[in-house]
Amino acid sequence: MRSTRTAIASGALASAIVGASVPVTGMLQAYPLLTGQAMRYALGGIALLGWICLRGGRLPVPGRRDWPALLGLVTTGMLGFNACVLYAQRYAEPGFVAAVLGASPLVLALVAPLVAGRKPAVFAVVGAVVVVGGVVVLSGGGSWHGPGLLLALLTMAGEVSFTLFAVGVVRRLGGAAVATWCCFTAAVAGGVLGTVFGGWQVPSVREGTALVVLGFVLTAVAFGLWYFAVAQLGADRAGVLIGLMPVAGLVASVALGAQELTAVAVVGAVAVALGCVIGLRGRTAVTDRPPQADPNAQLARSER
Image (cartoon, rainbow, N blue to C red; front, side, top):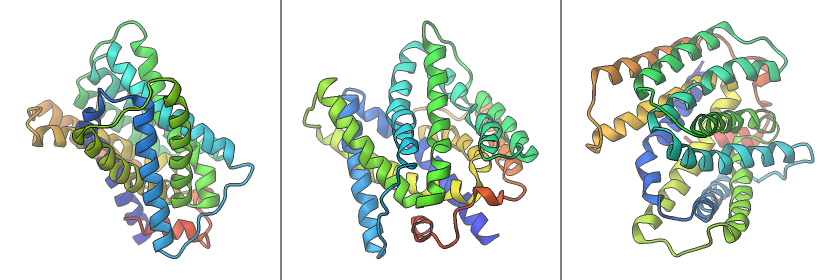
């Protein structure tokens, strides 16, 4: 029970960090997308590797069967996701993108168990449905035009793949190792692509601060916490915690004076919280847990 509570807290904190980081991400609107992501992920990878070394651990080298999942995660769940989020908002209102992205918990609740060879858990599915409803109310819906719907759906697919691709490899390597290898891989890929598309430029003080915060807090800390939660809870149960991202974004916006707190937003936030409580009931499937002897899983546990 203690391990489960710790995993829930880790997943909730990771989602809150991601949601609250939206204003920081907005500081990089004028900066080249790919090279900015490359620097952010490089910083995150260095921080994670340093943490592993300080804890006296080692970074295991992924095997042949691990690389397809890692590359798929980097391509769709990291670089692809960030690109889709940026371009989707050119053709759709932020509320619409958030509403579509809010369907991620339901997709994970249905698909993750099937990938693991078991039936979807009733509590996880019901909780995910409530979370999705809460996110829609919280975000206020919104409209889209042109490829807005397609880009929003691709954004959701990227969010789902960030978790699904990691399930098996996290079980084999541990959360800290997966987060580290993904960061370094994304840094190299983003740097190569960014050299061709967008180029490099020296960041301003404001942009440099944003990159450091995103690299160390959003990437290193949040990635480690999230993969620990997925390893302990299973992708379907952990997925309901994604609904906390827009709630954290709302809190951050209200705190910064960028948005007023409305009764509708409060209702949506309460619905998300209720959905999380429902979805996290029940036991984690044994097949979703990492091996107890995995030292890197223990390292991921220490990243709280």
